Image (cartoon, rainbow over all chains, first blue to last red; front, side):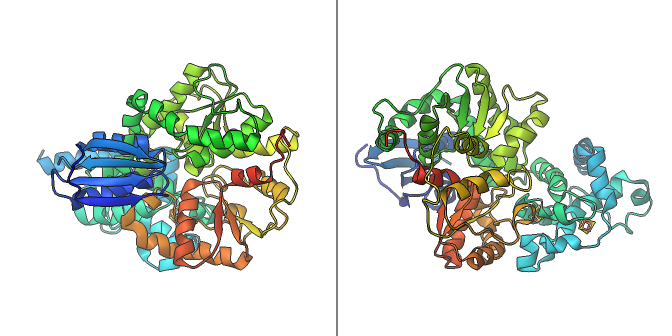
Length: 79
Length: 425
Ligand code: SF4
Ligand code: SF4
């Protein structure tokens, strides 16, 4: 898990919900199917928004972690 | 019937099912006087006929006339009759419908009070039925519904992250026992915030100081199903809060600073669900204005000395009727309040409503049409812009960059916290 290949970094720090989720949605097509976006947000609302977006669009959060106030999501494009 | 005729019949049935007396009045009455052209910020800023309110409604009117009126059936060409499955019409309808911010400024100007945004609700139903609903608004609505179904997965982790904000609350109110209140049965107030802590912390501080018996909703007030125009999804999203209010047995549902959430809860939920709310919905602005007037909280008069101006969010001002409560709060806390011109019912839309701040495909018209708001703000010479709506704040932040406004954008409750004389002092 520690050596996940990241295809695209998204800095979503400071953006208020729903914009972190909107930015992930806009960028998911920029990585190939099977590719991974690492998105770093700070709004706690993203803790529900991004995973529920992933589930309802058929994509996958393969790892989620917190570093201080940074909420980091590894989102794998499934389709 | 051919598949095409079948599809047409289904779409016409859908439109017909929405045709109540009010809507027929809107479609039959327009005299094409074009007075509404001066009311729509998008038309005024761009001059593009696509954004002329009467033209937006005209696209639906052409289908209505051709299939649902005797004269239109006899002489469809005279009324430029169109078919509901016509791709060219649907493409145009998409651009004009999802661009509309539902500000209803055009209705206020129209001599017959024609509500173009109401006609466009039919357009949205038609677009959804033909697979042309806004993709991002669909995703936002679907993820809110998913969150509602799986809320137990999220509450623990969200409340853990909110502990930092609770620390901040204790520091401000100087009470080691203060904190956010969750799942409190029988609380007087269910406070419905937005997803971020910026709409929770100021309210929590004020509730604490007012001695309010409150509890925090697990759900955000925003409702992208409403912007999408999908009333089934919109109802399901609002239902999460209604069910929570029922389960907890609260006395009031207090809505945070979010324009469309006010209208969804007070005006639309009962239409969609055909039931009343389990408790009255009250704006947090009315609550806090009442706390100040009743002496339940104390603020230092004129504490904020920088020039402050106020933007009436369309969904809180013109469409909900709250004009004075936020102004009372501003006057109680700021020494230099400068209202914009025009204001209240005539306030210009900021350009970011209707879900536009999330729909990047409309960035161009959103930023261009925001010029009117930017000019209004500049004319006040204020350095702080206050507005009680998240969409408006996000839009005015973009206008800040686009038009070099050099203005601080603030929520109303933030002013109260800045001027608050806490009980500990
Ligand atoms: S102001 Fe009213 S009647 Fe006149 S064109 Fe606009 S919608 Fe029609
Ligand atoms: S509701 Fe607002 S954005 Fe929509 S047509 Fe009327 S004035 Fe324009």
